[in-house]
Length: 403
Image (tube, rainbow, N blue to C red):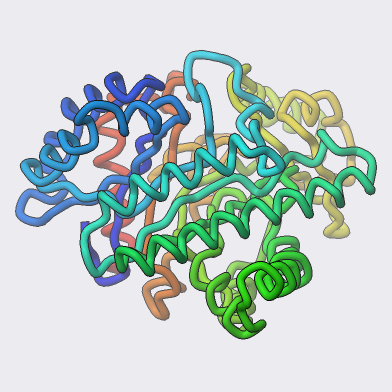
């Protein structure tokens, strides 16, 4: 739905079902109910997640035409897509495989270009559209520095190939689509500074050199195209886990002319760790209730001196929980954004409020997407019917922006 601060929607990666027929069946059942509750008189956007399989199937027979006709009939539109998870995302162990295939592979490249071709046919005229994607690869897969450097170069080359494809789509159709890189803990790009460093010292130089030789573009033209089509996906949960200063990051991006394609509105777990053993055990027991086998739940612990300790998963942090100098944990578990206090533990809802306030006062993107995908694996006390939960989340964002 269109708000003063941008187009607001939810991401359909909350729905199980990797085939197009399964995903479409859930959309046909749920979307009309959501629209009636949230945007009865105006069109409502959808943040579409397509697996690789679904993206292939959507081009078969008349599926894409049927979907477009359904959107028109229901008052829906697609302006953003989630191209991070390539394969199965529910009912099976995902963990680090959410990054596979990574950006070093042609599979990731082909999948993303296919999503762009679909999105070019779905996005309404006179709107930009975006595809969020993984932060190149996963650091633990490349322990050797030379291997990681080589993987970064190869991944960056593939990202530039997408930028070239998006530029051609724009020239041929007038549809402006951007690829929105999403930093995440333990990704090749896991923070604002790492993303900016890669953008300025890897992406832009390689693009200018390669495109000058292959396409005859000047350095200025290459930079213009890259900055148009390669953006940042600002996942609030991921940036909050790293204790990052939101205002400073947004300001630096704006000063450098690097665009934010989308804000993913999401909350992480947060817990203050008491010094007394009994009180600390109670908090840790509460956190242990979120240690589940499907998704990665990276933890970043902050010590009293401000230093950070990184853990690849919640189970690893729980096994090292007796450090007396650690005062706070933040964990990568997308909890409902409308809940801040969960008893002994909290969420990073205040970070969302900070980012939405920045967006309200000085909009830096057109796309706002709520991305809580963990409903099936949440502890029982946080679970609620899915449609009811989506409505509560989007209403919370609307009310927060209106304050």
